[in-house]
Amino acid sequence: MALAGSLVGVMLAGMAGADPAPSYSQLLRQTADAPRIAILEADVERSEGLALQARARPNPNISFYGENFGGSSPYGGFGRTETTIQYNHPFELPGKRSSRIAAGNAGIAAAQARGLEGRLVYAYELARAYAGAEIAERRIALADDEVEEATADLKLARALVVAGKEARLRQLQAETELSTVQADRAGRQADRAVALARLSALAGVETPFTSLSESLLGRLNATPATGPLDPLQTIAVRAAEAEREAAARQVTAQRKAAMPDVTAQIGVRRLEIDNATAIVAGVSLPLNLFDRNKGNIAAAQASLRGAEARAAQTRLEAQANGNAAQILLKAADERGAAAARTLVTAEETYRLARIAYEAGKSPLIELLAARHGLGVARGVVLDAEGARLDARANLARLSGLTITGEPVQ
Image 1: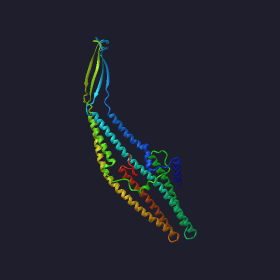
Image 2: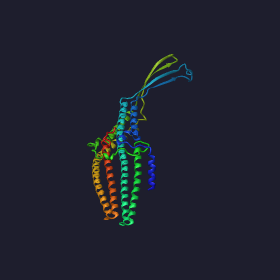
Image 3: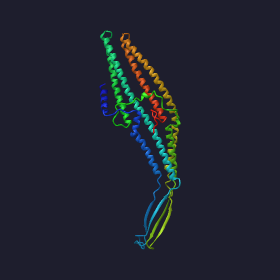
Image 4: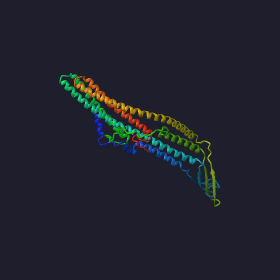
């Protein structure tokens, strides 16, 4: 218990300068600069850069060279020198540049779809982290209630011992129970500090939050903001389809890249021996004897096969996940209702057990068991609320929304 208390003290001291976490919706808006979001934006910017480069045309070049000088007679000097300055302009065959541009644009669309999917996952994980911190705080409140109840039970046991109606052993049992719940409360405080630190890290905040400013679990009674879910229209499926399209465009671009480019040449030649100038012109065409871009074509085709397989798998998973999300949400609601009924029963059981013990009609062990059952029932209710939030957050993610019903951009 002392060690747990020291751990909590160190964590709380480290959070002394932090602020409470804002509401979930506000926190999500404030995380535009969070590392997770920055990674997604960088991926989109990378694709935009590649698409911009795909529009570039081949650069022309200028060459200058001389002939017929510095050799044996009659070319020993510069009297017979021929100097040429030449402009060389490459021309891409039709379809090469347009295929690169199409592949670049498809890459942007795929990156944007992946980015949107990543933002939805981030919103989902942030909601779970926020709820995790709130559950940790509520567990402390439950532990406080148990400490208060155990203290009251101990006082009652002492009074009965003093009155000679109970053996001292019962007082020792009550003291042990109080020490146990006090130790549990210290552990709950450590759990809260850890949960708040994880929420802060996910939100990109260096100094951990000290508390929450909103009850996200308290919003579960509202009607879910999600409508009918079409699994094949989820962002995961659209992202997989966009990646498949980008891979297909890359295959076309790599095939076009294997086609040789024609280079037109035109220049001016100076002939010193005749004191004259002349025009030179020509066309060059590379011979694709060795490099036919076969490796890049094969790699692009393999990427396309992989993207097609991932798209097919994503569609299957989307169907299963969509059905599962609806089932889990219904089960979570039913679990929450059952847990609430159990809590009512446990509270009444503890109340009656305390009355019976105080009247000397039941042993202390029954009171302790009833109070333990009440603590378990409270924990079950909290677990059920966490499961309901997770189910709703997951369904909202599949629907392209946050748990609060806001679209993710």
